[in-house]
Length: 614
Image 1 (cartoon, rainbow, N blue to C red):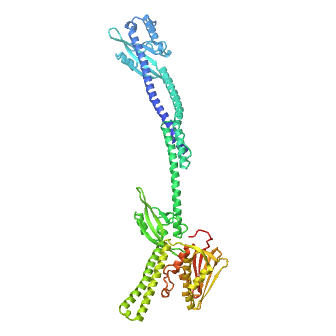
Image 2: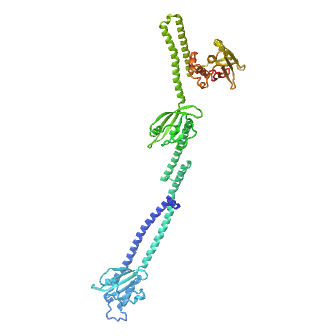
Image 3: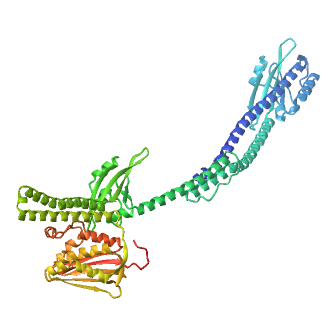
């Protein structure tokens, strides 16, 4: 594997490519050059031999080759001349034989081997000689001797002056020196090729390094960018294409770093928004599996963490159809009721399902937004109950007034005792409606924040005794005893006297209404352990059931509706009292036990003298 990676290096590829190109080019040039050189040397060698043969045949004449009237044991002058002539032409190392018309050897060059001198007088049976004696001028061939040397053989006919063939020239020349020269040239060419390849390899390494070094630097920078290190830069070695690529890569690194920074910033913002949203958010993938939740969603669904692979329908506890429709691209909304196990109360959520669309890929998931509409539903229910209660409270006296007015119109007006009683009922019901409307106006002013407090220094003992005096007639009628106790350390306070009088009137009136004859009421005032002014009204009445305590301050709420209405109450007294106390910055609480009694405690902040008043 290491070797494979080695050959994958672009530097090695460039060097190998250059070397192969040089090698192929040199080989092509060498083959052509050596082939041409060989052909040229061979042709030159052959032409030289042909020229010698042609010259020798032109010099030989019939008298020279004739052996008539000569002693066979002694050379004649013609033979001596022939030998001299042949010897002069054999200076190149070629073996020359002069043959007569019958193919018999007349003369052999002196540089021939001694064994070949014995051929004089013998007939040369070579095919080339036969062809030459037949008049064929171009007779040549290459032969290989016993020493594995290549020789050139040429045979030329010798013509007399009258065109008669009188003999032949037979030349055998060794081509050993020629091929030795060719081998030397080959060796020189091979050496030159190796030197050229070596120099090319060195230059290829240097040149490839100028290309691969920037590429390696780019690779290192790309790895650093992939690992999140954007502070490194690619060195720029020039203004060529690689240099421009390095500059572009550095610019890309800067932009990528800025883009990732912005992305991380946006991601942190989105995470912070999701974590601190008042609405719950759940996101799913294309299969409906929950992949993202925020803290509010987990709190609303009363789960600490979601299991891996849980679906949105399982997390919300609903059917799969709405989720499937959302994953198909349809938006939907539904209400979800969920009861919290630890708090024991029921919450109402509005779940809005929206598909997540990805460009060119359709729906990639869904987002579920959970809005807590519990308070809105409660307010809507309270509004409906409020309208129903107001309608009922107004309808009852109006019906009564209408009935008695019709009775008066029908003749009861002519009977004074009956008419006076009917008129009294009409007056009573009218006053009841006036009280109801007045209470509603009070609540409206508190709801719209238009009710201004007018604080003044108030003597607590005087205020509480005046409240008792206002109800002295009712107290005497039911023989109820009242005690007033004020802490000597807190004799006065800065209060809105009219508002607190209204609160105390309501509390004392309720205590008298629901306390049996002969009972008692205790009114106390003083600073409590938290440093606030605490005014408590305690009675020994019938009390309030535990199940009604948490609703006692709701508008028009009555524990015993029929009895309360008969006593003249509107069901708004405690609501108005709570609003007045809240306007002071305080609180009101009720502690009651059925058939034992009730304690209503009003806690008000003690405002120092000279401070700003509301």
